[in-house]
Image (cartoon, rainbow, N blue to C red; front, side, top):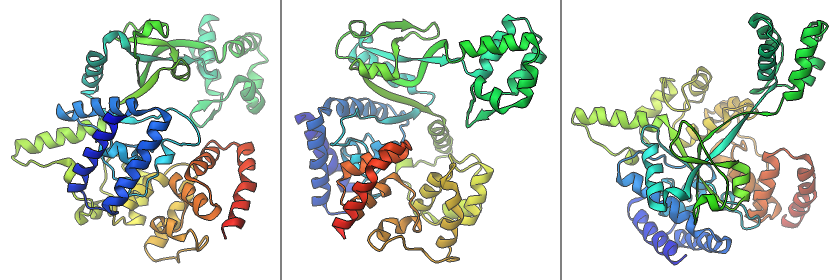
Length: 431
């Protein structure tokens, strides 16, 4: 803990020398001390130090590392340790969304590395902590209904064409096909096909094996590090395609066994940016991607005219349409668009664009919280805003507000019903 405190304080001072402040140095220090006290209370200083160590190693060896994403970006300690490159005070990000003092859960940084050099970072971690203490995590592929039908069809020696036709009759919900039982209830063509004895047999067998594990492979990003040889803690498995062992417990059970999971994600965009910088260097143009200004007008003109082919997260035709309507002028507009462009919140994009461009008045939800939503044109876009609203309107602590956010995110009706009277009473008491 003393080592973490030392590194965090030194790191914060180094950051404050070069960043434009969005608060006073005293406010930064107060936030840092608050976060450190929670990290100490929850017993996670080692976790932060390990992550900071391999990220600093990667940066020292010119391996591109992402600026940070997910809830970890809300931590000032992470920013001070150079785990992330986002100032959480500048963007009003909340630490309690990452580590909630009212609910003990493991911290989890999602860290992006250049796709081509991610393996080097994992190799460094193996060398640093011992090859017998570092492993990847197993993941199991389950037989979904379509695959079950195809596999059983092969065993029963039905023609490929017939099996393919049956498999295609199973509807898909979201990204997964529905179960065979549901498919039979919803799809009359499948019920009709089942009248044939061999098809009835196929569907009967497929129904029985649906959901069983079909194969094992390693998780794309998860790595565990133990304080002793891992074979003393969990059974291990050797994937023939990897020279690194994997745990035989999957993601859920590996944490229950007391191991800490670290995510080493490979991100192609970081590789593309690095390649672009290398090509510019050959022309004698050198610059630091981390120091480029975020208020560059020609860049926003490109966004507004939707010239964003191959630009990370804004390259689809739907995104291009939204950019033309929005005419972004600041980084906050781009951030809001990426957050809104998903099923559900998408219907708010026209409102955001119209309010931003003065075609419609900003609607007030309630005078006490309008300032929280000013940046997003009066629309609740971010989970942090949900937490701030609960804090300001209903007197929640940010830890309590995080529990409300989780219940909303998981759409658990019972949890939501539990929070409702608490929220209403809180509003009465606060106003």
